[in-house]
Image (cartoon, rainbow, N blue to C red; front, side):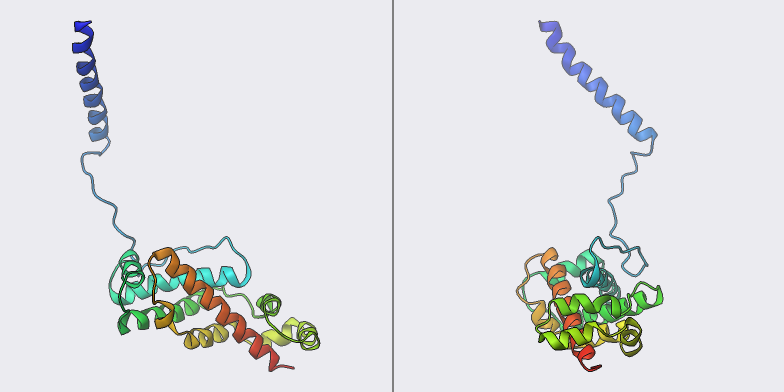
Length: 201
């Protein structure tokens, strides 16, 4: 019994030593903590959603990177700053708005902005229009909608109309920040689309 009591700690020490030897042999001795990603570097941003929700989700993810890049901080540091207690600075609000505009430009350049006609039906579904006007708008051919409305212009106007300072107030977590901005951008895009499509009839 006594021999077993002495042997078990010795066996454990030998096993731990063996594991450490293997780890060091494969580079485990040079530990470096993970560094935050460079917000200024382009990265693949995808969404599992569809329609306006997918558009605004991707827009916000890119925008946060671009805002952090403008401020010279990591994405994580930017989120902590704007999702924490206290007032948001002019620089933070301006960086986020500029980041949203940068995201629109990036998506336009890489061909991931959908045509306005792809978003109109979804926007009308949540709009409070009389049945006749809604039917007339839905009857417009996609070519007419796309000729009259450019998605980047609709998005840029919606972003300009956002009250980002109010939007960023009373946040207490990063997920809440992204969800709130996505919802507000989505609503603004919907309102802008409906208003501008109404102008076509």
